[in-house]
Amino acid sequence: MAGFFLVVVALTSIRSDGEVALKSGSSKKLVVASAPPRASKVNQMSSAFEGLLKAKSIDPRRLIAASQKIEKLRPEDRAIRLTKRLARKSEDGAKKKEGLKKARSGRPITQRSIAAAMTGKPLSGPIKTRMLRAVNHILEQKKQEQIALKVLFPGQPKNAS
Image (cartoon, rainbow, N blue to C red; front, side, top):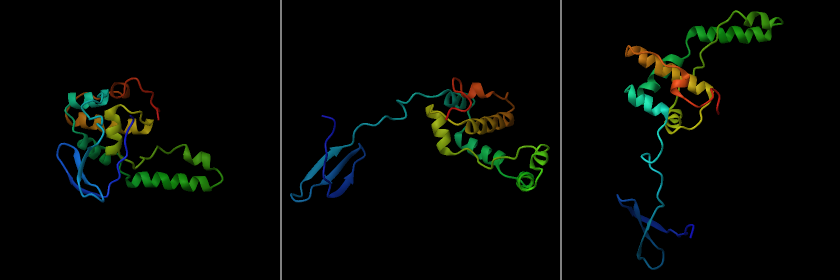
């Protein structure tokens, strides 16, 4: 039997062991049903990213803070974007864009992307690069050696989305 359906009229309580006490509509008697077991975080395979964070004792919340500091847009980034935008509007747009360096994205890593990296899900290239910059920033503060992208995400191509 794959599953069963239960009509719920009123929820009375949720117990600490995961069982839910329900009131059925007409007879007012108490029916207890339990939810199907879910894969817990203990059962999930840890990734190389998670192993590296534990080995180097880096808190994921610190990664988010470092990424926000690194990726935040600054006035020079806004000036680069303005110059590129004005160059696109002019006739010789390709010539003016050559001398400019690349502006920051303004997009830090998120808790969701860290969770995906910890479980080993594929990430896009820009997210991996942002995570690498944040990890290397923290390692630099701890006076440790910086790491390469292939060490942080082994077995994944740079743009596996």
